[in-house]
Amino acid sequence: MKLRQWTTVGAVAVATVAALNTVPATASRPYDPTAQSLATLGLRHGLHVGTAVNMDALNDASDPQYRKLVTSEFSSVTAENVMKWESLEPTRGSYNWGPADQLVDFAKRNRQSVRGHVLVWHNQLPAWLTSGVADGSISKQELRELLRKHITTVVNRYKGKIWQWDVVNEAVSDPWDTPSTLHYKGFWAEHLGPGYIADAFRWARAADPKALLFYNDYNIEAFGSGNPADDKTQFVYDMTKSLRARGVPIDGVGSQGHLGTQYGNFDTLQVTAALKKFAGLGVATAFTEVDVRSQLTAAVQAGNAEEINPRLQASAANFSVLMKACLAVRSCLSYTVWGFSDNHSWVPGWFDDPPEGLATIYDENYQPKRAYHELKSDLIFAGPPYVQPRVAPKPRR
Ligand code: G3I
Image (cartoon, rainbow, N blue to C red):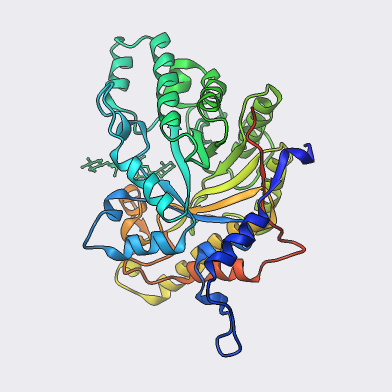
């Protein structure tokens, strides 16, 4: 990696923090880091702490605390749903930009960065597209052209306003899929073959020379066996290496970080090692969708503290593992939670047998949980020599 290709963002972060901390510490009013937001504390390290934003909640006048916390606690925002293809182009040729525009404008007003999510994914595609392919009225050649047009149109609209784009999302299978040997899965690989991945990055780059272009996936927080047949992290690493070797403009790999307290998960050093290995390819990294869910047993639902407390503690520890690892690796540019409060989390709606929840850093009444305090203390107690300002790659041409 050429040193000149990297830009230090630490100086910018220090200046931003100075601007945010407008009230200087005095003898009578000492600086209290625990009173600072996650955003402010993150920027001490040049790290953006972000959240996915649910636009219905943001616009709900009866829920003002949601908007208040998005504004005050986070320095980066991601559209939870409104930049997905089914939202942007529900009817062929007719675009619904309103909610996505609103988020981008909101972020600008609040001096927040935007992670664009998502250009190419096999979920939340418009019905006209999937049914057209299924009934043969959209040919493979036309499908490829539709994808090029979609990427070009969306990236162009937000050109200069998006910091990181999730260009391709979740392209790789899991060991529980069939066949169990890891492979490129889903609608796009099935219809266009894996070459769509390189195409997507090239089309995105052509539309915006400055955005950082990311591949984004889950279950890639740490390496496993090292065999790409069953180690998803290794598979994604090999894919990234190959894309870089072919000059494809991929600038980053996003690790989603959807964890559960019922699983073994990872320790900080394992996750740090994985981020470092990706950094060795010259790409940025980021945690893009962090949450740590728990099973809602009957006792949890009945309010039994002996069942709830260990879950909250384990959840906090897992949030913290990812944060510490991110802080330790200078190429880890942002840490985004996938919703910040339990009343607006995708988890209960998705995992219902057995029911799961308690996945975020605030409870359903916007009270901060242990996880919030652990993230805060990780940001407060980190510093040189082990934690240094972030370094971001120059977008690859
Ligand atoms: O918009 C419809 C609405 O019209 C309808 O009345 C309602 C009834 O259920 O559904 C609404 O759509 C829901 C949509 O979110 C928008 O709210 C879908 O049912 C629901 O399945 C969808 O879930 C989203 C999920 O992606 C879909 O795959 C979650 O909110 C969103 O958090 C989740 O996010 C993904 C990331 O994009 C990629 N990584 C995994 C992550 C979690 O699954």
